[in-house]
Length: 92
Picture 1 (spheres, rainbow, N blue to C red):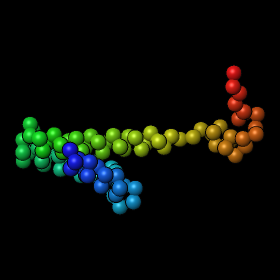
Picture 2 (cartoon, rainbow, N blue to C red; picture 1 turned 60 degrees about the vertical axis):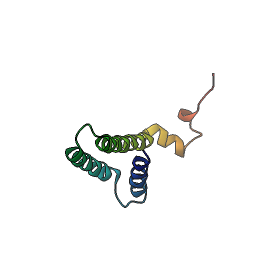
Picture 3 (cartoon, one colour; picture 1 turned 30 degrees about the horizontal axis):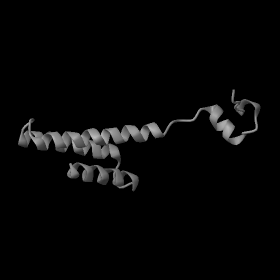
Picture 4 (cartoon, rainbow, N blue to C red; picture 1 turned 180 degrees about the horizontal axis):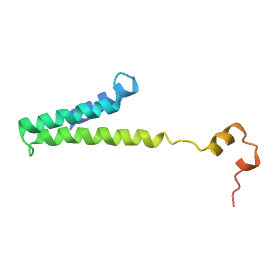
C-alpha cells in the first residue's frame, strides 16, 4: 500500500512541476501494469497493485479536470463589472 502512495505522489509531483504530464504517467502505469500481470499472473498481488496505481492516477486526473471548470461569458463579465444589474444576486 505504501508503494502505491509513493508512486502516486511522485506522479502528481512530476505533473505539478511540469516534468511529466499526468497523462504520460497514466500511460506508463498502464504499460507497467500489463507487464507486471504478464510476469506474475493476473491473480497476483503485484498485478492488483499495479492496476490500483493506474486507477488512482486516472481518478487524480479526473479530479484535476473537474477543478478546471470553464466560466461562462456572464461569469467573466460579472468579474469585470460586479455592479452591473445582470450580476446582482438577491437572497430570498
